[in-house]
Every structure is written in structure tokens, then in C-alpha cells.
Length: 295
Image (cartoon, rainbow, N blue to C red):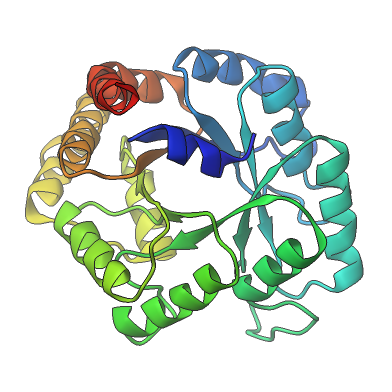
């Protein structure tokens, strides 16, 4: 199934993100995690472009196929393109097709350490164009409510986002954020730009101190004062911080659903306990909203 059809059928889509095990770890190690995540009843599960990098070592395709064929959940395979050539991309796309994967999250990927970007494809819009010209995948793209780290402003980032959408994107998944007002402002500006595809809100439950530094490094996300108070209050108590992080994510999601968000994309960090706690807290809201649309 194309995931765009799920957005057409449901008022609020609920999805999860997982990452593949490293190449030297048996793929079966993630089966228990997937079993528990399936029980949460997500609309789809996305798989990050995992460790290994190369066409043969990367396990995104393998794990996406397992999610779809073994666990009967629609899969969204992440695909990065920076420094890629046509031949490499075509091999990856052919492999995804052979595994019956129908949906791709098209990403640029991280720039090389030396900053040099060479090859046929160095931007997400180029990957989107290539996929839509040569294949029959559903295509999603990323968006950044606070603007991408490498852009000068949110307005400039929205120009780039409009370019991606115009190349043929079915829907968008946002980078994590911790202040819903920033997401609403972004959504309003995107609409004024003529970006009219569904925008799924990316939510990251912060459950340990190590995540904070990584989040800042990856996204430079703004931490509201009330969120910072949680980190300061419970940073010496892992269980309390975990529960507070879950509660904060639930509060965000309740507000987003009440404000007509198109979907919630939960960054699980392969932690089914946290994902289950959150789905149990908001599941009735999602069922209620989707039931009203079905009526």
C-alpha cells in the first residue's frame, strides 16, 4: 500500500521509526522489538538508513522487507543520496522493488566531513525527481519546523521545501521539536507557500540525559523552559526522567491531535516500552478522531 492512501483514509496517522542493527549483529536480534511494536498497531514503520552505508552492508531494505512481510505492517524505507551516482541509486531502488517495498523517505543525508559533495545526486529534490521519473514508489520527504541547520532562515528553508514538494512528494515528516507553537507557525507558513501535502509531526520522547546532547548536535532544537526544568529536576534519577519524558511527549501529542495535526511520527529509538506507554495514553484520542472521519 502507498502510505499516501493511509493519509487519505485517516484523520490522524500514527507511525513509528526504528533503526536497523549494525551489520555485525544478527538481524533476528530486532525481532522481539518489532513484535512488541506491531502490537501497538502503527499505520506504518519507517526504517532509518542504518549503519554500514554501502549498498550491500546497509540493512534498511532487509529490515523494511521483514516489517512488511513478517509483521504485516507497511514499511517506509529511508534513502539518502549525497555523493551518489545513478548506478548506485538504481541498484538500491531495484533492490527495494524486488523486496516489495512501495514507500521511500527521500533524504539528502549528512555532508561528508570535509564538506565536499560530489556525484550525480547531492540534494533531496534530485533524489525525488529520479525516483518519480524512473520508479513507482510513494515518496515522503523531511521538513524542519525550526529550519534546517544549514539554512540562514526558516523562510529560506521553506523555499527549498517547496522545491522538494513540487518534485512530487506525497507527505512530509517533521524533524523533532519540543515546542508545539513552533510547529504551528511552521505549518501556517508552509501553507502560505503553497505546500499542501500532509505534514506528520515528529515526536522524540527524551528519556535519558545522553539524548539531549545528540538532539542538539543533530537539530539544535529549542528546549522550552518547562522542558528544561524536567531535565534539571530529574537528571539524577533515570526512571523519573524516563517517565517525565514520556509524559511530556504525551502532552505534546494530545495538543497536536487537538489542533488537527495530520499525523504523529514517533521516534522510538527501538524502545517498545516507551512507544507502548505513549500509544496507550493517546490511542483513544486517535481512534475517536479517525472514527469521526469514517462516519
